[in-house]
Image 1 (cartoon, rainbow, N blue to C red):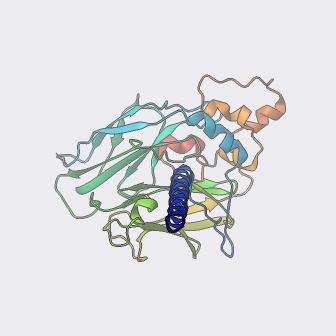
Image 2 (tube, rainbow, N blue to C red):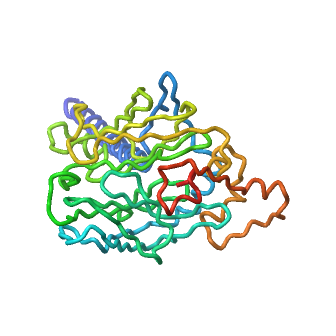
Image 3 (tube, rainbow, N blue to C red):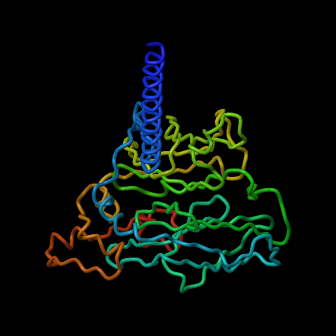
Length: 348
């Protein structure tokens, strides 16, 4: 009886051990699958809401047009000016190279895939073609930094590897300003900029040397710095911890101001060139430019598909209503546009 009792207990113990091992394998397998599935998704987040501002979904037409651009992984390079070069004159010829992304501007709608070229921390210049020379004229002596990245027709930056490049050069001599530390995170302000004729208005920026949040949060004792972007619009502030374009409703008519600051995990500004930028923008309701009509839903993705596909022709008869939807209004009072942007001041 003793041996029978021992044998019975042994069998029960073995069965229990196998059961625990089986359940452990199942739990581990489920955990791996859950982590893998979650890593393919963006972390959950709540929409940004303040007293006067609210985050909303991107306009449906823009969401639809973006699907055409998913096929591209732009690769941008600054050929000249070369990094760390000293130039003996204030006029600098810029040479850029772009791969896996077509550059063009639809002649009727005035929008198309392009590059954003930023000298120091000035508002960007939109580049729709590399066939014509790009010249920076009458630069002040000292240090200058040039940044460039690929942009969608509605001015959202591409954020894939290779879509951005920068170079720091000198006119006559080196000075301390406009010289970002390449070992520190760098914030590049993109939008909003200029004049807008409809809301919501897109907020967008580019980040360099900023790790993914999951990497920064793996170990509290590591030296990988987590980040936040503090956004202040007309005095109301909120934090952004995701790197993507955000559409904001609630701008006042007339002049608005927007500030972007790069913060570390303690809430301190990371002291690097360009990590604290303020821009003035203007909101004029009922703008008749292409972007305003896309945002308001008055111009469909079908009618506007030529801004993402140069070979696309809308199969719709040119009725007066369609012609009116494609009309462009030009406001000569805009003083912030660059010469290449004057034809479509609301857009660029």
